[in-house]
Image (cartoon, rainbow, N blue to C red; front, top):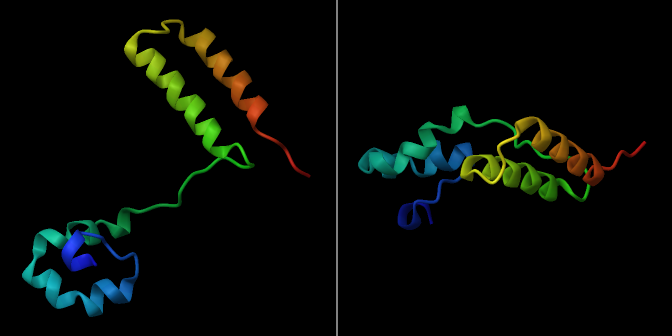
Length: 91
């Protein structure tokens, strides 16, 4: 699949052993593989509403960017209230 689609296996053995010759012959296909050391853990919000929290923040940033909102402090408080309502604390 890596040879025909550009998919990059996250498996070290696949990249360093199985596909070694392929990457040597096709250095452009190795670009993503060379960036593997830069990867970090995926940041997610806890609970069932994790994706909704991300969307709330995204929507708030977009509102600023497109000029739908120009009061950063008010928007910050709105986002804080909405996000806090979505996050659940479990003991």
